[in-house]
Length: 377
Image 1 (cartoon, rainbow, N blue to C red):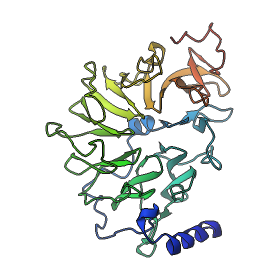
Image 2 (image 1 turned 180 degrees about the vertical axis):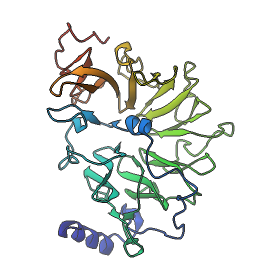
Image 3 (image 1 turned 90 degrees about the vertical axis):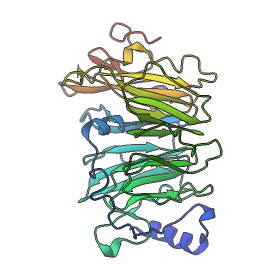
Image 4 (image 1 turned 45 degrees about the horizontal axis):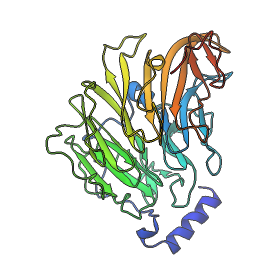
């Protein structure tokens, strides 16, 4: 740990004894390695790594797989800048997973001999102090993680799943980092000031800000395969169908019967529905969005041009982004490229993605060449 981070830790431990201040660097190790046998394997399947390679937040979005002159795995954010520098754009390692908060961004990495978390942005509540990598019993103290493989961010806090279960850090003003008793948790998500986990029995447990009814999980929900948290609502996938609760006015999407992934924005959500069998060439997925579009006309209408071989969708605060994969030819020869499209709120440039999918070529999203780029209504 460098001297700056050590100074921050000493300051907080001496001046922030109450978790009401938002920072806690303690970890209960009584549930020793509860996830080794009970939870998911400590890595993301390839298809989930793809889906979590794109995230959208308040005024910005971030993605892996942005093409540059040297690589197709470049990391980049666009929209409003965050405090400090971004996480390194030349990210290495496998099983990368992104999460985004109100004004910070985090990623899981597997480099330097072990899996870890790296964050950048506003650190008012300690949300971007990277947890230590715990490699032995001696290092299992304070602000640490051991083999984290799922990562989530709320407005000003983060949560991760590692070999010891779920751990959260950052703003705790509403209890969003006070993890309840869980048994072999499989997944964790966060949004606003709320955190939720899929426990070992495939049920949903939520904590933090529950004033909109986020903890009122419908009794008929069934076994949950995926879950997402918005500003004041929760949506979950059970048997391919989506159920939302909290401040949702009974949102429902009748077109979604085989959902495999869901992303929640501030007031809307988007899913990937498995409509065809996946092949080497096509994902078989189609995106749908539903919820409250506010004053963003067309926010919930997914452009048809982004559906071809779509791999990920990310709902932000009044805007949405998608990532599709296609064969292209730019800079690095014939290879597989990722194309990005965003639409909706754009007051900070968050809906102007760095690279868009334009047939067999990449074009910038500013004044795209209509000879190659289909018009996105």
